[in-house]
Image 1 (cartoon, rainbow, N blue to C red):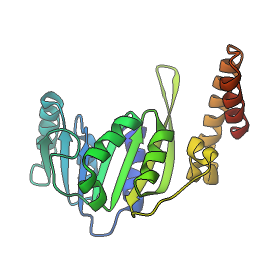
Image 2: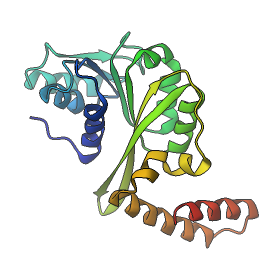
Image 3: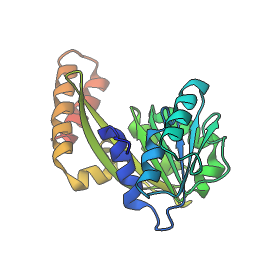
Length: 226
């Protein structure tokens, strides 16, 4: 069985928490080594998967990992950009990219994104802009999870977003966009550690700036983190 990193495990956990009982088809965009679709199929979360990547080299590694796992009849590798390599999937995962790159992939493959029962997104940055763009385009954010990893002695916090297309315009407060409405509501231990981490960063930033507009914005964010 494949062992996933905490970040990818959080992605898979959210897939499992929200996915429909028919198990359907998963499309993993930027699959890299193919670990996520392999684990998803091995654990019975999905019955079939597309492992998609823009680059041939990682896709070749994914294909070998899929072969070694004995899953060539259940996981298909697809070479191509974004959502272009497939027509339809029940759940689309786009993880490990910047928020605006993720949004670009969704925007360019809007037909596939709208048909999916679920989008599971894990932005590395620009999370606020991704949330706002999802809402502007008629996607409902259904849940969010946060994971904390320490790599090389440094803290890394990852947000995993579950969304689906409804066609309805939704609007959060600026604080909810900044921190995540569901994360604010759950107020879990990881989120508390994250808020302290962000407070320390903003206080350090405030000590180095004198621009009035930037200072006002930073102090507002600091207030939201209390």
